[in-house]
Length: 328
Image (cartoon, rainbow, N blue to C red; front, side, top):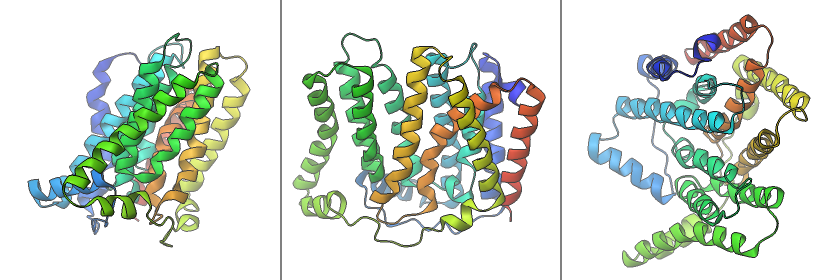
């Protein structure tokens, strides 16, 4: 599949969608009890309320939404990689790898605030990369802050991306207090508008004390050892280790823009993983956020293998393991 998708041809997009459907088949064949969580993030709460109004939160309707979300997100991250020119030619391999990573565990595939927030997390990385070698970046900085706030209103731990913006400004730009101020203004704007709406409806206390100042890590249902110690988790971690080694092996040989992108991706992985500390009910679903950096790193590893057959075998084995354990 790696060689099939390693083309700069939009004709493979329907096959990418078909692959996304196949990776989600277990949701349709063996339904799970997808009890909608008591989400406190205002935008996620509104989304589930809207789904309840449209189709009574029908399980299969939510599963179909999950397929569409993962497919669109895969195209978004793929567009960023091609624009940065991480590879010598255009490719759809990052999109292919993203779909696989986003379906690593069944919990990842369920519609959740974390999965919804990725629609904004991915554009944040795109905007941050536009800071490099641009004279005026006020628009990009404001948009980055705005997108981070929107992502956080869907899933609070996404707020850690403000640290990513700060790191990018420090590493890509000479210090300019106006850029920092504009980024902060972009971040605060959605919160101000949402707070105003809650104030008009008489629910400002609900917004301030349950969302802004809510307890963090109050739940204790995070079962990481069992999930990541499973065969799909171990295999993925081994691939990730090989990818990190490949990253650092080629780092100094890469163009400066690619180096900046690799650095941002690594920082994003660290910050998004640490973001679980801001979650009220830590769950495995949080780590679907890591599908973004994981897709970039693993596609970089697979496409830098000299023997393409090995890349095909490694990815096919990954897919087979993941699909099998969807039904276990």
